[in-house]
Image (cartoon, rainbow over all chains, first blue to last red; front, side, top):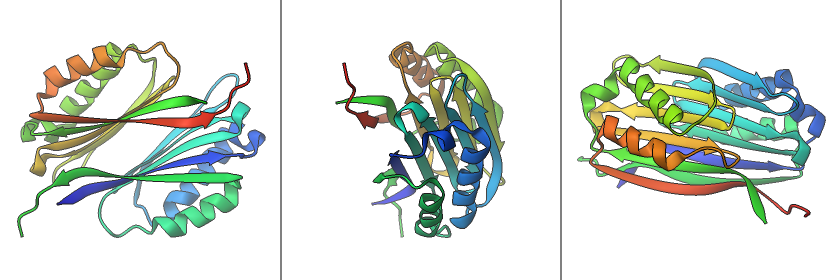
Length: 119
Length: 119
């Protein structure tokens, strides 16, 4: 039993509220995360909410990065969905945490597409 | 302890491979899912892979819908991330399953942004 994809759900608590409000900063942080993880970027789409908050997605050859920010709670929810073995997510995460400096990070990994592959 | 968001990870097994290959059909199914769930759509972005497979995201006011398809395994991985109480995801899921007709569906719900809210 193997899985086609791997998804990491990342909870970022205690971020800087001002940073989470700015779509340019949030997109730059996510693009840095994706590039440093050696993802192959297809397209990037970010949206600024009124009054505050940012949602965004980066489609990558290996699947996706998404983020939703709640500046009023200094919280951001990030997802990274990948397939294949060519990315280096740990490397990307080091840089991403340096940029956003959350007080607490929680990670949950979920296997996607569990299959019985014939050898 | 409450949560800011709710994420549903949806595993669709035994879908029609031809349907999962076509970006137009996959996007139409996802838009129907989002609309029937009463989501407020911000933007929709879908990508056709060569040789096969589709990745796509719909950004919504309430967060996002994403999909990645593996036609060669008749499998699709769908995520719905929502916040607030105004959507009706069960209603949307009924229509979505009618369109894609998976043999098996597995759902996993994950709370995102667990906070202690003051009353």
